[in-house]
Image (cartoon, rainbow, N blue to C red; front, side):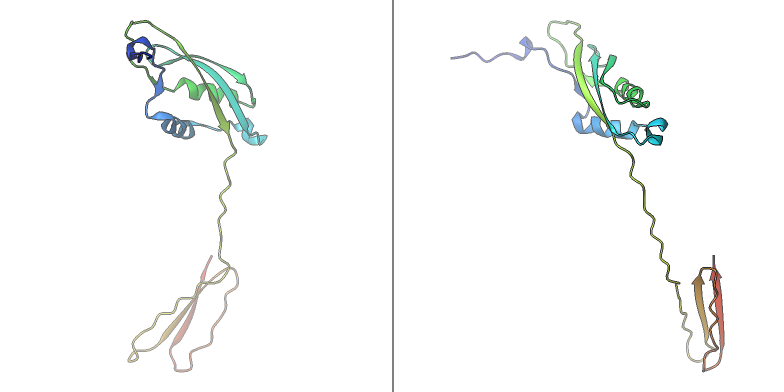
Length: 161
């Protein structure tokens, strides 16, 4: 029968504080898409290898798969801001951990603004015992004139630019 290993025999790997999902959110929040990559419409991934020291800080990083147009420098900047949790080592050794990450650069999507071309008409009703006034609100350069109501009263056209 095999013996179960104790935790003090093994060295624990560093983990990002909050987990993998939190790391992805941090990278997405902190990423600043390089201007030259935006102008040239560059998309892709940068693969980086980095070292984490015994305190959880990233001490060095290098690009394994380059994308260019400033994306490599941005990926290195993002990796250097990462902070990891390293569990206590029972033997009190100062170990450097090698890790790798792929940072994806995707062009931001353009927002589409929908505009309605129909003029907005708002009618205001007033009780029967007073004079009736009809308002017509239009948008655009042409103003549509309305005829006077048959029952009397006034009619106004308001132009909104």
